[in-house]
Length: 86
Image (cartoon, rainbow, N blue to C red; front, side):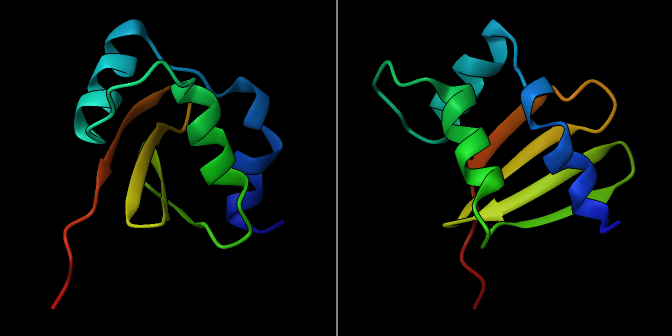
């Protein structure tokens, strides 16, 4: 099984905390009431999302956004806009 399939098979377990919601909205510069967890899940399941595991975290990159998910608890730790590489 492909490594990223482990995360995709557990997509229903992905969640975050109240502080996580605030941190993600601040990092993505959101000023709306959208469902942050569902937004992140949609990014993760997108076929173009680059998913890899390093240590205790999964990293999911799509549309210049990087989402960090704890590999054991499936908690979204943060999401942020990636810096442009030159």
